Image 1 (cartoon, helix red, strand yellow):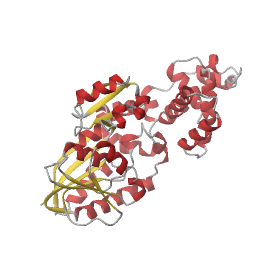
Image 2 (cartoon, helix red, strand yellow):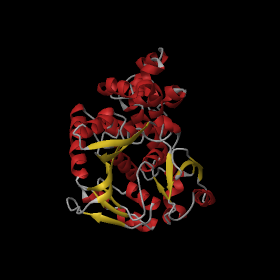
Image 3 (cartoon, one colour):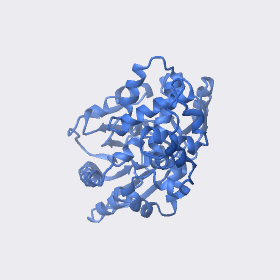
Image 4 (cartoon, one colour):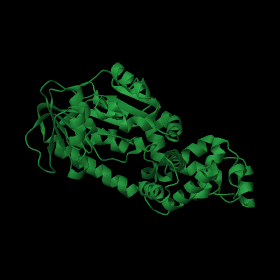
Length: 389
């Protein structure tokens, strides 16, 4: 496919997504029905679509409208590419520019700070400006770009240096990342990861560097009983098992289907993790981790579709749920144990405010907390370690 044909494909896909179809489904169906598109073409079109979703507001402003065509015109303008050289109508290229489009593209662009702000949901802007303070502008800029690919080295099987060497031998270049002693940032060869020997034998796992940094907060001792109360796919349970192989890890989630990958991942990693079915956790634990359901605002450059789907009502539902989950999980903490609350959110209402509301009851106090934004390189994360008063 030519660059122009890729743009045309992305325009059609974006129109379907803007009409309400899930992005992943749209991309999967397009790949299946366009077998002529090679893996490079599919990857390139996917990148165009997700770049447009990530920068939906600024691309629409630059390109002249919230349509697939407007977003791709905005992308060309943002990247300094000549739209007239690509929008020719020849072959599989998009139709030539209309007079109104040419006039819009020739007009002065909005100020950079205005463009960055437009890539957040408008209703959320006041809250983000308050919560991020001086970090608002740099975080907004970071969130417009693709997220790095990070790996967690499985220290139960290897060292970071040895994992780097093994990956390099398979054409995957990495560099240590300062957020965590187990973190590697992939600089090239990311698409080879899933079939690499290093991945298949459990030397490395995909995990954001900020998520890995949060795990360093947690007090772990040999033989500790640990409950990952909202385990999902088990990424944090696996990291805890690698950090302390002697710990007894139990993973639980209210939706058992979310945990279906834990067993094969644990086998690959050489970890022992017990699965507790929904509502069937028994006993108490030295450490209870609550990686609570949240807006995911710290990860929106990875999942930009979620950014535009969040509503005030949904955020209110999430904050209420977070308080309920914290209260339930606290009941599983053994005397002298610790409760760790965590989200991948940038919003204080899901982070500091939740901890403040929970500790205001007088039964728990916060020992330490950590807030990370994409300015540190990884996703946005918050974590707090709590103890009984």
